[in-house]
Picture (tube, rainbow, N blue to C red):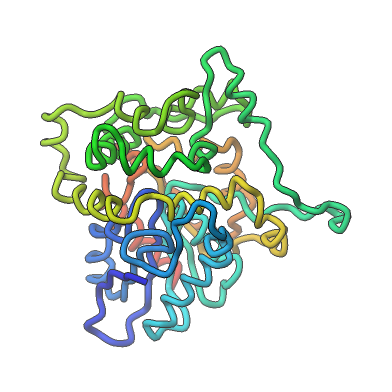
Length: 356
């Protein structure tokens, strides 16, 4: 595993583990790691399985998905912690798809992961196990939502369904606007810089409600993701003024995804949408996150509303010891990059309270 490290000069420091999301890298924590290290922590940020310079995974669409399931991603996190000589961490912090991995770390091994921060993606909790579980074998089930979205007067599709298709990787890696241009438009579209990001709660998980989401979540049926975000490409002046992701930093992402493609990250989505591993996760049915927890997101991020009711359930029921919950203004989905100074303040406040 390729790991970025800060605060390693002084032995005996408490460890903090940072888990990135899609389509990102350990590099996404570049503005967080120095602040945590300066506060006395040993900070570890791996390229997770399927990403960047971490090896040992297959990008074969027809290959085995099991290595990308949540329990194995938790095992990866344990492996990183142990490899650097730690037996526990002060906190595991996950953003985007790294958020549910961090949550599962806290559910499965609270003895190792003593606190958890979820960023941008709230946690719905382990899947429920029915009373007569032996009579309910879990076969993959198609969500009727996909048919309902396709049947709208403006036919649509959910991005996670698209990410599960064979074509998605090539659509993005070989985007007509170039990979750098695709990522620029993608990051812009999901940031506070795009004026259409003014999220509000949806009333239910149904086609008419989800059709209100921006097109990076609920796409036009006939369009690829590259075509979808191209419509919102910022102009040259806006790109030149971007201080949270200047072109030389974006080039790091573009260079890595040019080399690896996106399929490693897309396998994570396929695990979730297929339902193949839900039965395994039912082992922890009704378990809550009891370690100190926090939730941080951008106020202009639709991510905490895209699954109606999950944000509220996480705060009221799933996280039993939530001691910080903050939505940061002038930040969209890439909160630790768009508003890193505020994120760093909140993380240090949480770490001080959770370890007191």
